Image (cartoon, one colour):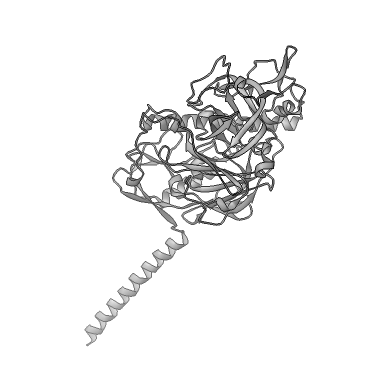
Length: 489
């Protein structure tokens, strides 16, 4: 009897010990968050684009009080003959150059603002002028189709630029585009803007440099160059622009007669910055200074939408829109700055030597989110803790944390959450956490990168904005986020 009771006692003690260990493990897991999303690797279909595809016009429609423009990835209009691996490497290399350019612009503007330097004198006609808002057009990534002077134009969308421009006849030097060149002579509503106008003066705020006017040149000329050597030179003009069924008469744009660079097959650029020359500011009477976009998860076979207007009923968001305030920086008034107050990985809040509540730039033209070195290292280490067990792979371009996932049908990816001023919490979609350097998933990398210095400004890139409705309310000075499965229909 004693032996039986002893065995029962031992088994009972062993059971309780095992139960305690399981509970402790569960508690540790719970304390660490363990919030994950499943990424089905086999369903991503990361093949190459068909070489027969062309940069076809994107659809648009008017619904209630909003204009909805179909958005596609810019690779839909370029690199069609390159493999996905070639495109991925090129994209990241150019993205890194864009970020360097943005950091230089912000730093230069800060130094200029601190020294209270006077504005530069008007440049000579034909000069190439550094642009203070936006650069590296190859990485602007998303395109829409508009009508200018009654003609369809496919343009890249950029929240980091202000001036909307297209290539125009007579084109002294132009890159190859899919659409016919815009012909001012064929548009009855086209008007060049004279030098002595307020709109010509607005170039100073939009680009950092005033318009160029010569004695024999009564029209206002612009000359903008980007730090990668790309440029657009031409005449500032007015014409009718149609956004779905909404006409905007007297729209001010750049009619580029000399343009070169990495612009793909597009006709030009749509500037969605905050200066008076941006499309957002010029269409306040029609759209109230509000626009939003939802970026698709894949490059070629999916669409997103750019919505102009403040009719929120047309959104298809699955979570409420949460707002955070815009930070107005007098040094860079065109950019959209936010206060980032925290990041969590798998439910665990990051701790780093750099305190949060830091200013970041949200940008539609930067691909990969950049963080200052101390924050990035903490994020990377925490991600590796949650994503342990998967075989490593060599680093890829600007991405230093990669894995070989070729043997997996799906993986559990820890949830990454940004918290912005006002307790606005935004979860990064699972498709925006890992970057596929190789289509067979043998080299898949954490889609975040480090800046070079702690003093630089963090950037929230478009890769981390996938499947989110991102709302820009320039009149209310706030940016909103909501989860949404992106599509045009």
